[in-house]
Image (cartoon, rainbow, N blue to C red; front, side, top):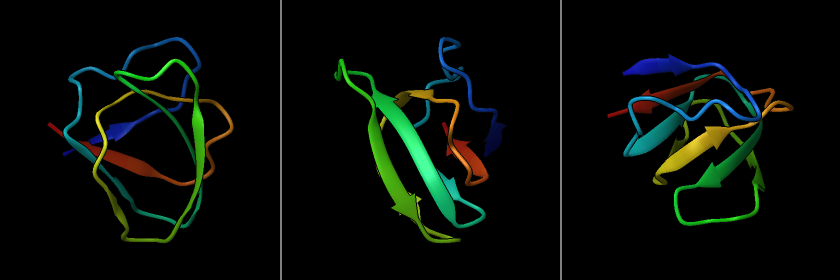
Length: 67
Protein backbone atom coordinates (compact mmCIF):
# COMPACT_ATOMS: atom_id res chain seq x y z
CA UNK A 1 0.00 0.00 0.00
CA UNK A 2 1.38 3.41 -0.93
CA UNK A 3 0.20 7.02 -0.80
CA UNK A 4 -0.57 8.60 -4.17
CA UNK A 5 0.06 12.31 -4.66
CA UNK A 6 -2.27 13.81 -7.28
CA UNK A 7 -0.53 15.14 -10.40
CA UNK A 8 -1.72 15.83 -13.94
CA UNK A 9 1.16 14.20 -15.83
CA UNK A 10 3.15 11.93 -13.48
CA UNK A 11 2.08 8.33 -14.01
CA UNK A 12 1.42 6.40 -10.77
CA UNK A 13 4.36 4.04 -10.15
CA UNK A 14 3.98 1.22 -9.39
CA UNK A 15 0.73 0.90 -11.32
CA UNK A 16 -1.95 0.07 -8.73
CA UNK A 17 -4.41 -2.81 -9.03
CA UNK A 18 -6.91 -0.88 -6.90
CA UNK A 19 -7.25 2.33 -4.90
CA UNK A 20 -8.57 3.11 -1.44
CA UNK A 21 -9.92 6.45 -0.26
CA UNK A 22 -8.68 7.16 3.26
CA UNK A 23 -10.80 10.30 3.42
CA UNK A 24 -14.03 11.25 1.66
CA UNK A 25 -13.85 13.65 -1.25
CA UNK A 26 -13.44 13.91 -5.00
CA UNK A 27 -11.24 11.47 -6.93
CA UNK A 28 -10.20 12.32 -10.49
CA UNK A 29 -8.54 9.40 -12.27
CA UNK A 30 -7.50 8.30 -15.72
CA UNK A 31 -7.39 4.54 -16.29
CA UNK A 32 -4.68 2.74 -18.23
CA UNK A 33 -7.04 2.14 -21.17
CA UNK A 34 -8.86 5.48 -21.04
CA UNK A 35 -8.20 8.71 -22.84
CA UNK A 36 -10.40 10.87 -20.63
CA UNK A 37 -10.35 11.44 -16.88
CA UNK A 38 -13.28 10.34 -14.70
CA UNK A 39 -14.48 12.22 -11.60
CA UNK A 40 -15.90 10.22 -8.70
CA UNK A 41 -17.23 11.17 -5.27
CA UNK A 42 -15.75 8.67 -2.82
CA UNK A 43 -16.46 7.82 0.81
CA UNK A 44 -13.77 7.27 3.43
CA UNK A 45 -12.68 3.63 3.34
CA UNK A 46 -14.09 3.02 -0.14
CA UNK A 47 -12.17 0.65 -2.42
CA UNK A 48 -12.07 1.48 -6.13
CA UNK A 49 -11.13 -1.44 -8.39
CA UNK A 50 -9.40 0.36 -11.23
CA UNK A 51 -5.94 0.40 -12.76
CA UNK A 52 -5.40 4.14 -12.66
CA UNK A 53 -2.35 5.51 -14.42
CA UNK A 54 -3.12 9.08 -13.25
CA UNK A 55 -4.67 10.50 -10.09
CA UNK A 56 -5.17 14.05 -11.22
CA UNK A 57 -4.84 17.43 -9.55
CA UNK A 58 -8.21 18.44 -8.15
CA UNK A 59 -8.52 15.20 -6.20
CA UNK A 60 -9.51 16.12 -2.64
CA UNK A 61 -9.63 12.62 -1.11
CA UNK A 62 -6.49 11.04 0.36
CA UNK A 63 -5.77 8.04 -1.86
CA UNK A 64 -3.62 4.93 -1.40
CA UNK A 65 -2.76 2.44 -4.12
CA UNK A 66 -2.41 -1.33 -3.87
CA UNK A 67 0.17 -2.84 -6.21
